[in-house]
Length: 200
Image 1 (tube, rainbow, N blue to C red):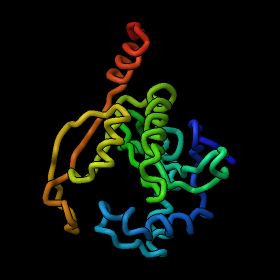
Image 2 (cartoon, helix red, strand yellow; image 1 turned 180 degrees about the vertical axis):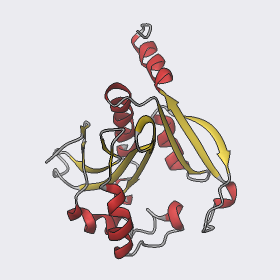
Image 3 (cartoon, rainbow, N blue to C red; image 1 turned 90 degrees about the horizontal axis):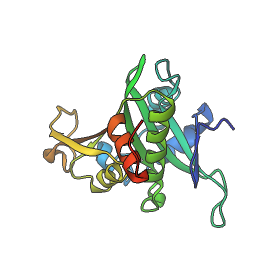
């Protein structure tokens, strides 16, 4: 298996067309889709024709993909290879790694286990140390408290609340969306402070 990133409990790997059934199941859970489209399952053909090509797209500026399938590593409680969901670490401009968007969509059964924070922190570290990323941004609905907590635990800070012209109105959209971000400089300062040293 081609592994992009390994954490304590997960591996992140590129998607393949064989992941279609996993994606359909993920996007078929009303809880998972609650803050995306109000909880409606995504049709299989939409996942195949629209979503999967986006997950398989290689971004030249980053030199790699922008979405990663997350699977468990072998532990005493879980078998290796269980599909957890996916992480997004996608450049906003296809030919530049400077600014990337962080995102995550995990199976509801895994919520509250720390996977989203674990994966987000690892991606941020890799982005700043290996991929030439200068700024990480993330967005969610204002009312999505769980996702906001993950952003904060991963080191991102609140930037603004904004109101987009979305094609669909779902519960909570009247409160708008929030943007969080983290710059490489801020990340390096925090890392140096935690080590009791000044950044190089």
